[in-house]
Image (tube, rainbow, N blue to C red; front, side, top):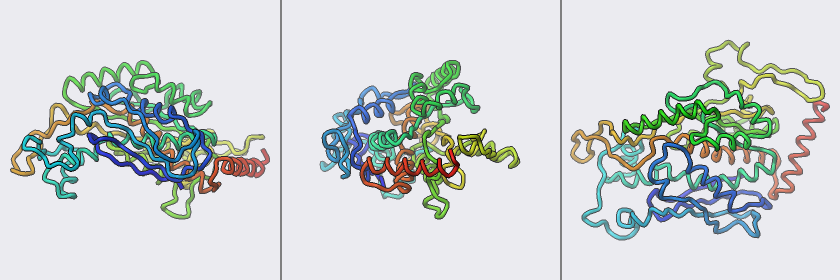
Length: 397
């Protein structure tokens, strides 16, 4: 099975990641990783940090002559801003008298609970690791898995349906046409927008909303629409709670900093309707196997893929650091203070959508590997094709 770990602080020397379990024989180029890192850094509403960093990964192991070799892939992303933090984030030297100590937590952030949990008097260590800067390492790690899935005919893509008050929750009219050629076609269309929206009118409203929030010293969240195409029927399992694919996908998405809600298909809308208007009816089809004319289940039934496009929705809350800070208190004196201000974004929903694409990749890849097994790309693809042929035979396609 594929698993990955990340390490590093927001203003430390570097971020790093180890990816274990990638099959051998997957062709990887530096662009496969760095293009995903560049996508993560884009988006209207990003802060000053993105003007400093230009993320590129250096691979230290696990790839030879452009192909994975079955051993762990390790990679590193330099933090260019580290040169400005060598004193405040010194690893072995003692702090000097001028090193600031942060004792006023931000509402909505890990600050308060983190300093209590780990016994800190200074919130800085919490800020450093809880920061969404960590997601750069996740995107780099998971970009390798996206390549593997692409070779298996599985694509992942996303767009932003709303930012703050701008946008809409109904499906974009261009959606089905874009998904027809794979979810990465959708992702490319979204990438052409500075807020990753598909309709120009929604983009203009979102940009205006971000500008207004920036003027007010405020922040904005939004909703991400995520799609996975090319997934065969029968991945996942209902036999144990920890193998339920819907649970694994939801966990991956909600692990992203500031994501507070996940929806599969039109789940919340479904909850307000009778079952007769919710479940996707089955039709025998003629030569094409079972047909569903709707996809309210989001491609998952009984915690398994049902052959339809997987559709997930994630809700990202507004970023916790406000330039017009909220009320807080000093944890040393217990006096009331306005909360700490840390350099931050006004809106990071477009970046979050790229991160969402990344984190679901290992979940889908592991569901595939549980079904096919195999240590080398060739044998995995052979077994996948054999499984698809069995499905076709079962329905006499």
